Image 1 (tube, rainbow, N blue to C red):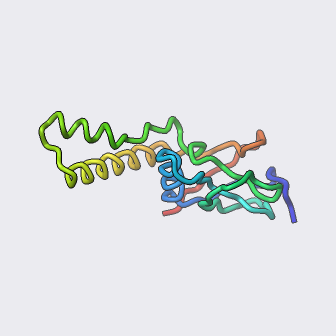
Image 2 (spheres, rainbow, N blue to C red; image 1 turned 30 degrees about the vertical axis):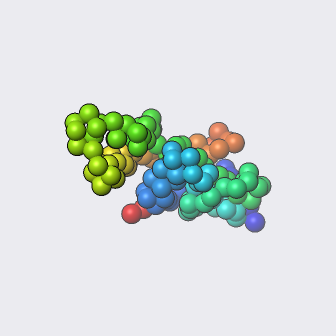
Image 3 (cartoon, rainbow, N blue to C red; image 1 turned 120 degrees about the vertical axis):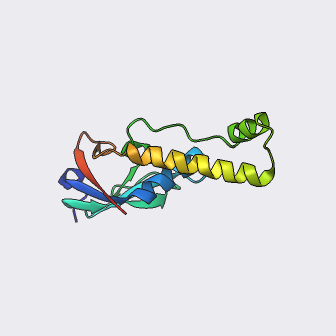
Length: 133
């Protein structure tokens, strides 16, 4: 079983897994990462994982922001509220809907910035990334 990450040439990862992990991090929720598990080979699948502890020698944890070139700031619930109140349009339902639209726009912007190559953590080894979904 190979634990040598330099054997990896390409990663496959679901777009939504990257977006979900990045959003969880932005919301200060669980420490979501994209994880690779040995044995390492030429083509690997990165999967969404909640990292409660550091990666062991047989796994690699990739921070979701690594997949994104210049990640945009996550929209703030408070900023959404302020915008609605300034326009005299505030109520709880509008707030919820407006914030969901802001998050959807953020996810679209993140998708437009997904990298096609990245360097694996703890190495200087670069791999190609293929997005699924």
